[in-house]
Each structure stands twice: as structure tokens, then as C-alpha cells.
Length: 479
Image (cartoon, rainbow, N blue to C red; front, side):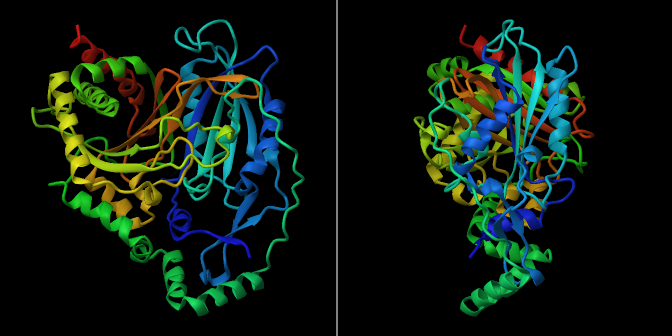
């Protein structure tokens, strides 16, 4: 019998709209080794590792009449050349050209008639002027797109993980001949659905209601998780302030990035007795303050920006690669945090953020990753991951943006012998959210990826540039 999608994973399919495609992404930048790193080598690597992620050769089949949730079936016409694509930047291959391409590629929805993932090799990336990617060596980037229904974050892993190794010499993986299982007929799918309905009759009604767009039925499917999230929002004290961060979004995206050093965050942490994530949120608060003022927005002493902050609690020893031999076991705790953008002092901003985070930790208002995160590796959860249109509609009222911070390994990783220099998450936008911020620490760096609506955030690069300025403000307090 084919594997059936969970209620939450199925809701990602039912609730996807043109303006809110439910795929997540990651942009990894690699240094080309002398042996080369090209499209053929990347395809060969993925073909070797696909056996570790069998879901990536499966597609979704809907049950006639929506009598049951969809099922995963092997795609007998699986074509790796369709999923692994290549692109190239025109000269000079600047960062501006790279981020523009990422924004356009992430705007395109995935084809639901095929396995729900894509990967792009982007060639012609110019060397960075400074940092780990500087020098004369050529660079290439790999962009991944994976639907949130694909990976549950607990028992499955992402294609972006299994192509990464802890050594430039990849391990030997035995070849495995893949033979697709016969695809079930509509009649077989109906019989399976009827059999399940006999044992669980209430589920038949729920499935039909969910698939036809009844948001309340979807909430009922994940009632405990959704209830906790919405209770957390209701008890936050008030609605999120009205800001340009909340707008009717289009189908098109912009992408911007920022690079910082992990050691800078550790210095601030050591000096003021807080967590690295507290420093991150204070930095984002400072960047948002300067950005709002650059737009001429009123910023008073009590002005705040409310962020939904899902924090990874994965152990530091976990490695996002095939070396793990399985899942990273993503778990996050999610909080609503009022970022004090009205406070002019960077040190006071840090103290206010630290106080809020400690209160959340003490009261145990966390929402488990099992219900909020549906993606392995670098995990960017959003409120609409609860799988309910109602919650998605409420997001614009209870928070202004999502900030995800996922720690990565502090040693280099490789793909087909090419060292990964940087990794920028691409967090999807929820309805009414003009920008989402994802960041991950990796090998001594902290890398920010800002995904924004193309129309609502024409100055997204300005906001990204203010991240470094805000961090410098905090560092100045140490001197």
C-alpha cells in the first residue's frame, strides 16, 4: 500500500496559492576544486545519493473524490535532468546578479505532477572580494527548492543534506538499482480509502472537507498544535503593530543576503551574559530600526516589530550530511518576540530582547518542531506550517515577520570535492508577510538570507546591508 501523506503535509498541498508557494530553499556557494565542479559531476553525485532519500523519486497521487489524503507513489518516468538544472550568470557574475536569479527561481511554483523538488547549479559566480570565498578561484552556487510536504524534518532528510560530506573525498556508497513500483490505479486508491474509512469513518468526512478548502477542518486535523500557536498569539498582549512589513504580496520575490562572523556574536554573548540568538535578534532589531527610519516611518521610543522566532534546539554535534546516516532530528521552540526598534541604544535593545527570551524559556511557551517544521537540514518554519488557512490569515495580525536561526556545523562540508563556503536559507513568505529572515551559522560565519515580496520590498538590499551596521553598533559597546 502506498505511503499516505500526513494531515499536516497534505494541508501544504491544499492550501498552496500562487502568492504563497510552499517550498523552502537554500543557496550554497562552493569553491571549485582543481578537479572541477560542473553539472555532470553534480548529477552523478545526486544519482549516487538518491537511494538515501527515496521520497525524491516519488510524486503525489490524489485519491478520486478526495476520499482520503493523497499518497506518495514512485514516478515511473522520473527524469533527473528535469529536477537538476543548470544556469549561468552573465559577466561579471556579481552578487546582485546572483540574488536576482535566486529571487526569480524561487518565485516559480513546483510542478505537482512530478516529484516536488528542484536543484539548480549556478555557474559563473564571481569570487568574493573578502571572506571565505575570496581569491582567484572560481565559484559556483547550488540552489535547492523543496516543497514543505516532501520532508517531515523528523524521519526524513533533504537532498541538500545527502550531497554534503565532511571530507573532500566522498565516501563509497554502494550502487543500488532502482525499480519503480507499479503505480496504483484509481480503483485501487479508492478501495484503500474505503478500507481506511471503515476503520476510521470520521476521517473520510475530514479529508473531503479539508481538500475542498474548509480551513476549520484543517485546523482540527492539527488541533493541539494550532491551538497552542494561536493561544500564544492571543496572549501576546495585542496585535502586531501595523508596519510596511505586512502587505498584500504578489507572486514574485526578491532575495538579499548578508555575511557576518560568528566570533563577533560570541564576543557580545560573553560580555553581557546572553545567548547568541539574543544577539542575533538585537542585531535584526537594530537593522529594522534603521530601515524603518530610512523609509520615513514613525519610530517612537515604544515602537516594536513582532517576530515569530522558531529556534532550533538541535545538538551542536549533529552534522547535516550523509555522514549522519539519517535524520538531523530537527526540533524547534517558537516564540513571539517584540523587537524594540524604537530603542536607540544597541545595548538596551540587547537587554530587552534577552529579558523577553528568558521569560519565554521560563514559562515554557514553546511549540514543538514536530508540528511546526516540515523540512530537514536548515529548517525555516513559518506559522502557515500549521496547515490551516485560518492561521495563515491571522499571521498578519499577530506578527510582522519570521526570523529563523538554525546553527550549522563549525567545520567545512564538501560536495563532490568542492568546499561549501556559505549557506543562505530562503524562508517562504506567509500570507501578508512582506519579508522573512533566515540565517544559519556555518564554519565560523553567520549567513543571512532575506526573502521578500518584489513589490512590497524594493529596498530589500538596503535592509540586508543594515545587518552589518547593527552588529557593528553592538561591537562598539565592547570598546
